[in-house]
Image (tube, rainbow, N blue to C red; front, side):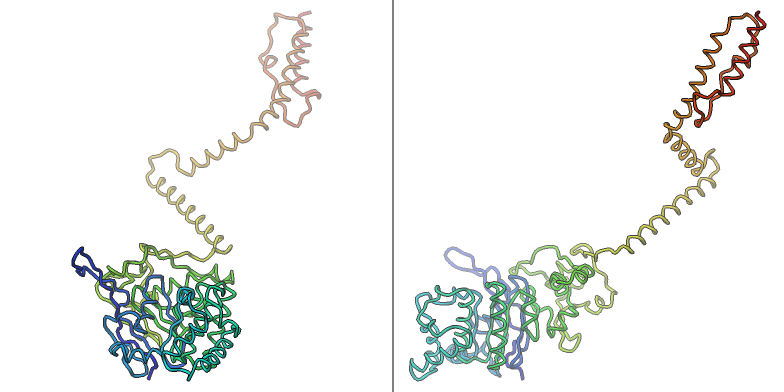
Length: 469
């Protein structure tokens, strides 16, 4: 039999409205039907977003808030139905470490007075001296000096105040300690000290913890079983290692994908699920599955029917209609309410993408050619047009070479013309060949050298001069 068991626990806060007469116009569904079991000597971790009802559930276990319906069973006794007088006696077995240690400690009392108050109320210790000795022993366990008894809460650091809160819970020798965000207000180095202290005390005293936190790394380190809450409901429960290795509920998958991993290779290779939208109001929760408004795998059934926690593995419970289809890949992720950030592309992926793109372009060009040839109306096919365009591009890209070719030819023309002017004018018939311009010399020819065109022109001029004489 479990040490602590919750059966369909609900905590609904009424919303009142009215000036002279309060009337209930609605409810805030802070905790809406949670069932779980905590074994003796076990650490049960509760995680979830802010506003999901984690702290309210912890307070409901101690009956610090009224339970609307359900059962809270501690070692066979239903605390929800106990009279206040009997509940006061049972509270010795249930203690709580609060999130804000300074706010939970009376600033007008010194540490000895704070710690001995609960002991005196429950009849622990025959006198104050006996209680003082027990307090000193507890302070030594949590790492505080005995001279702290006469000091006040504001004289301690945040980590020391949290240790005082833990000591206040330990002096009553409880069976279960509910730790509400025990390290969230502390520095990272102090967090490690407090978490290690909780582990040591559990091994030494055989304590049972219910740890409420939003830091997934801390919960994984300290917890044996983890429950994931969303909008007042438990959506997944599993052993710590199983939950982190293979989360099954879509909300848990999104939470785990948001946890950074120090190894850059693993971090770049994995996919991240980015949820869109805000947490719905607990005063107006969605119908059906509470998560369907943000779920990337949501189906019409999710809007109509609320899923119940069911066993999908040894000690693994999930509240999802389609968990098997999601795991097998039959149900693919949608794009409306979530996005998947793919892993970083490798060089091989880029090469394959370029090859595929080139092949697609070539196939499209071949299809255009085939279509144009089949029509037979155009005089020029797309392939011919591309060839002409390439030829024009090559012609335009080489103006410097054309100028270089023409430069020697211009020198040759000027030389030929000057030779012709020096010759005496003659009315004799000149052959068309003698008046023809000189041929363009190749680019390699030196302008200073005599070209064949110059030789022909000179000889023709001499013949004309002789005939004139």
